[in-house]
Length: 145
Image (tube, rainbow, N blue to C red):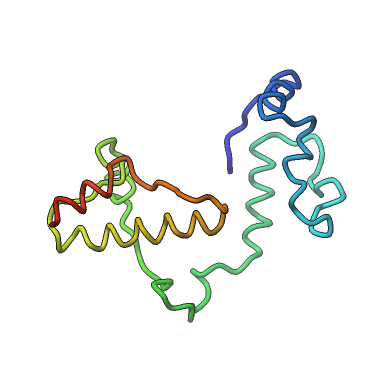
């Protein structure tokens, strides 16, 4: 669940003005109208945050997840276990940047996925260029030569 962000109506108007829009609805104009929800959420009124979270969790538990089903997706989408220590390690600040290692045999895979990611972002957004790391991949390529 996302954290609560207390924006006042004035805050919202200031943000909209900064991006040149009149209303929040304008942010979603590209989404087809037939997929818009045209009703209020069916959530009981006058509940505490804890009660709402519990209620929404019970609704979510009605769905089947990949932990209950067998996956035939392939391409790396399979049942696997990630030890809890992994989240603690990757949340350390020294791992925050996308870093290309110096060994050519390791760098090539990293350079490849950065290229693929940037290409995907350009295709999705229509931009001519996109960056995926804080270090210059071109500098890394020069080191490999």
